[in-house]
Image (cartoon, rainbow, N blue to C red):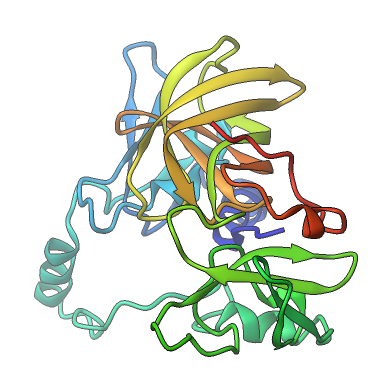
Length: 291
């Protein structure tokens, strides 16, 4: 799995445990620094929209909020750009007005995810195998430290043509990390369809096939998507363009323009180019969709 801790942190901690605490203490809302906008509807409900600053929009991280959580959320930075926020901070004399942007794990700080995980899960070394040839290229430190689409930190050099290896699979049964050179038809890397689970809606659920837009990760552009409900909180999504490096556990944000409709968790990723048969006998991979 490749979960997004920030999405889960927002739903379970900031707007879960912390919001419950705030309400017990007599407060009606929680304000955060997310670059996102809460917009009122004529019916008195709330919609979640992207922040006005396209370079800092963080609505993706709020994709799994509930309507009740959104009603109690406040996003004072959503109508501002980052330069405007820095200017206001400087005018107010705040010491961090010019502080460099940083990224870290929610409530943990500026720590690499790999380093954080290694405190709790021991290394479990295994072979790094090239998909097209079956050649063992090296050793990995544990499948939990790698994600589909990863280029850096694999631990094997590029070849003389300066092509880069990329992670395309994790074979749990044999503890093999599967890699291949990144090409437009690299097996396991590109996807046009997926099955998602745990659908979460910020408004009225969509119960019939619809043409929406979706975002598969933070800062990726929205892509036209055909959304087909399957029941039991699951759906099939078909993307207008091939998506790179999708993996079970990642978050899918569903949009109608800037309006964030809700989100879901990738359950099964359908590869546009199947793995070689010799590997799929062992590899726990979703069925392929070669369109």
